[in-house]
Every structure is written in C-alpha cells, then in structure tokens.
Image 1: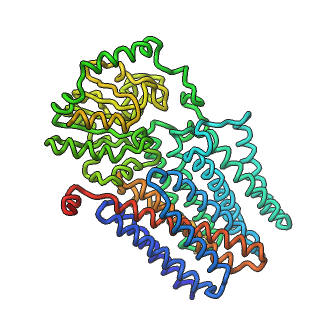
Image 2: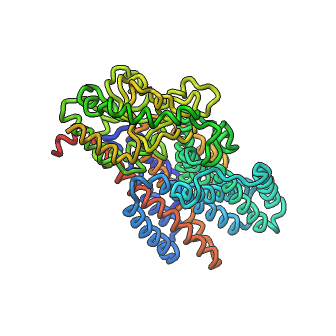
Image 3: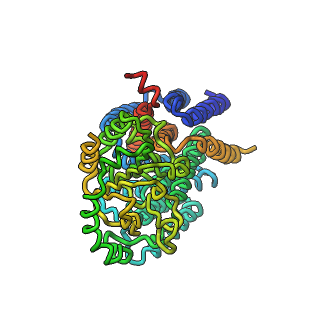
Length: 467
Length: 99
C-alpha cells in the first residue's frame, strides 16, 4: 500500500470520526455516531494490518484476541454507577499503550532524527504519567484508595524534581545516543512519578476534573506517538480526543468554581482531609437543629405539600446515586404525574462523579431525557415552582454560594431552590456538603422540610405520604 | 512541505475541528461522549501493530503484545459501553410508543 493511499484513507477515516462526533450532538443520532466511530476504527485496524503485511504475525493476533475477550467481558460487567472509575481505568490503559509504543519506537530506531526522537520521548513521558495518574484516580473513585488528598512532605519539591529529571533525561537521550535507552528509562520513571504526584493530592469532589484532564492527556500522548511514528491517522484522532478532554475539563472547572492550578496545589480553601471543624456549622445552629426539626416535622406535612404542589422540580445529587435510589425516584415521578402534576428534573453540571453522569443514571431507570433540564435552563423557572424535592444534594443547592464571600463555594453556580415556594430536602444528615460550607436552607423552618436518613427510606416515606 | 510539518499541521487542524464539533454535544451526553473518546484513544493500536511488527527481539514483541491488549480493551469496551449508555436515553414520546 502506497503512502499516498494511506494518507487518503486516513483523511477519510478522520472525517468519519468527526461526523460520528457531530451525530453525538443529538440524542436521536448519537447511537449511530458512536457506531460510525467504531466502524472507522475497525477499518483503521484492518488497513494497518494490510499495509504492514502482518497478517501472519501470531503475536499481533494473540494481542487482538485477548484484548477483544477482556474488552467484551469488561463491557458486560460494568455498572452505570461505576462508569467514572471505568473511564479512569481505561485512560490508564490508553496511557500505558502510548508509553509502550513510544518505548518500542525509541528502541527500534537505528538512526532517529531529532523530531522523531523528541516526540517519542514526550509520548513516553505523557503516556507514563497518564498511566500512573489514572490508576490513582480510578483507585480513589473505586474507594480502593482513600479519597482525601494525600500530600508528601515537600510535595512541590518532589514534583519540581521529577519535572527537572524528565527534561534532563529527554535532553541527554538526544545528546548521547549511546546511552539513549538508559535515559529513556529515566524519562519513563520520572513520567510515572509526575503522574503519581499530580493525582495523589486531588480530593474526592475534584476527581471528575482530573478524569477529564487525563482523558485529554491520553489523546495527546497518542497524537505525539503518532508524530514519532509518522502515522497521520494516529495524530488526527489523538488530537480530537485531546481536544474533547480539554473542553470537558474547562466545563467542569467552570461548573465547580475551581481553577486547575488550585486543584493540583490543593489550595482554594478546600478543607484538607475528612475532619472539617474550621468551617463547620456554628455551635448554636447545630444544637438547635434536631429540636426544630422534630417539632417542625409534626407541623409540616409532606403529604399536604405534595398534594398542593402543581409545578414540581426534583434535584438529584450524588447521595441519591450512592443509595441507588434512582428507581424509587422514577416511581415518585410517575406517582406525581399520575396525579396530574408537572414534574421536571434539575441537573447540576457536577451532579454525579463525572460530567453528565447523573443523566446516565436517570436514563438507566427510564426517566425520559426531555424531563432532564440543565441548571441554566431551569433556574429562571424556580420562582414559578411550588415544590423542589432535593435528593442527596447539598453544595449544588447551597445559596451561600451567592453570598458567603471567602468560602470555597463562593461564586460557584448553584440551583436556586430557595426561590421555590417550598423545599423538601432528603439528605443523609445535617452535615455540610463536601465543601464544608453550612447550608442556610437548613435553618429555614417555614419554607423547608428536612428529611434525614438514607435516600431510599426518605423516598418511601414520601411515596407513602402521596398515597 | 516536510513530513514533520504535515504531522504538526494535522494535529492542530484535528484539535481545532474536534473542539468545535464537541462543543455542540449537550451536557446531557457528556458521559457517553467521554466514554466514546476513551474508546478512540485506543487508536494507539495502529502504532502498536507497526512497532510490534518491526521488533525483532522477543522481549520487545512481548511488550508490543501487551500494548495491543491494552489498546484493544479500550476500543472494544469503550464502544460497547458507550453504545449501551446511548441506547438508554429515551424521550417521553418513545416511552409512550413502547407502552
């Protein structure tokens, strides 16, 4: 196969992938878009097998078969709630694959030119850091590792040292061809160290941002490996993946009111560790809470509130996902709709553990996607809402974000549930959310009904009240 | 134009074009999008096939095999899981029709 033909085919397949992404912009065509991308990748693999004339290579076939089997098993086993760690893990596999390609390219090259060698070294480093960083993130998401930020003594110095080591070893692998593999090994190791040092200090709520960022890194590593190998299709598809990850990272950062630098340096007033005494609710309110709640609950009748409401907005949060209460939420929605009420869902951009995760969890229990509304769409309608039902969400509905200057969530866009006529909050307990900032809605006895405990039980109570 | 310049230009063009198109994907579908992108990063398999075929040492070929497994897992599980997720999204009208 001539190089010109390969270039033409690569251009066609890249356009196929881009068309697939275009089709992803609408729910109706998204399935088709994904399948088109898959078809393009299948074609790309077949074309490269023909181009390299390796149809008899046993090693390649064993690799393809084993990968296919594991991939099938993994796809079958994964649950929707664990998609974030699955994506994290697969970012890691992508990084490992890139590091291996880069290593083999460096090793096999007889007389590498500067461009080829430098791009291979960069791909080696980015692949390695994607691998180690993603494994830490996936481990944290799966709770195999503690979710709280971990910082070594002199953390910044270790990071700076790894960077310096990486730069020096890349430079020396170019200047001293005789010791190229030795210095490439040091590049690889420093890349692994950089990934670890970046991922360890990231706390639970910031993990979605890092997953997006590593997604981008796995694409960039692939593109740079493509430059090293001179494979134009690898470069274009890698670039597309890199752009996508970057865009999602930006969206997440904006929605969470976080700066990337602050996440890595663990700054920005985020409480360190699990204990959050510095920003916990004031003594008095904590003592008053249970009294108020019990006395208020007898007066405020959820049955009457549900009965009287016409316009209802449900706000699901991560607490609902942890309690696996999606099916009951769907039952509640159906019960309310059968009584002629207008029910909609308000989805905060960071609800769940990765961008858009909550939508998938709700779609899984057959809640129609046209009932799901983004924050900016539904916030203007909050003052026309009779009843807002919050299930396992705290920071994303905290009005303190609009007023409490100096707190970690100040300036973060939130769902304005305080504008609804009445609010029912079903949360696990009265503690502040991950940010550690107390929620003033908890003090509101007129407008707000608090139901503490497991989301499933609270929903059962509401369903009983409705009957 | 040199080969290197073409590769860098392709990278820039693909990144810009991809960014523009991905911007239109609604936040409703961001999780399937990311899962799909995950699958696409398995494109490294092209480089791995070339590198494995070009390796002579047993150790290198074994390493290449390992890489092919990693990339293939990404491709297969990525596209299948994305397909599964996207099929779950149904509108109100679809639901009425189903019933």
